Length: 142
Image (cartoon, rainbow, N blue to C red; front, side, top):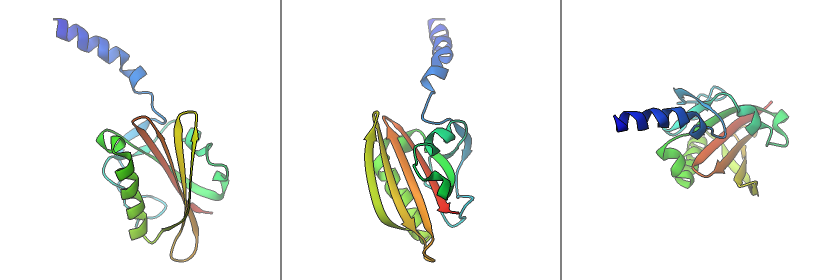
C-alpha cells in the first residue's frame, strides 16, 4: 500500500519534474524534414511546445528555416558524444562546420555551429545544454 501511495504521489509530481527546455513529442526523429540526408542519433525527438523559446535565443533565426529537436534519457546525459554524433551526421550529409561559438547564459551553455553544404549554402546547428537537458535547432538558409 505504501508503494502504491508513493507511486501515486510521484505521478502527481511528475509534471513538475518533466518541465524541460522544450516539451518533445513521442515520435523519434530519424531524419530532418529540411534535408532527408541528415540522420539524427537515437534519442532525438522532435520538439513540440516551447521550441519558439529556443529559436528566440538565435539572433539571426529569421535567416533560416529551423527545426528543433531534443535529446532525452541517456542520450542527453552523454552530451558531448551526442553532439559529436549530430555533427558526424551532418558531415555525412555534406554539411561542414565553418565556425563555432560557445556562450554561457543563465546556466545554459549555448553553442552555435555555422555550417555550409557542398553547394555553399549556409546552415546552422544551435545546441542548448542545461543540466541533463540538451536541445538543438537545425536550419538551412532561406
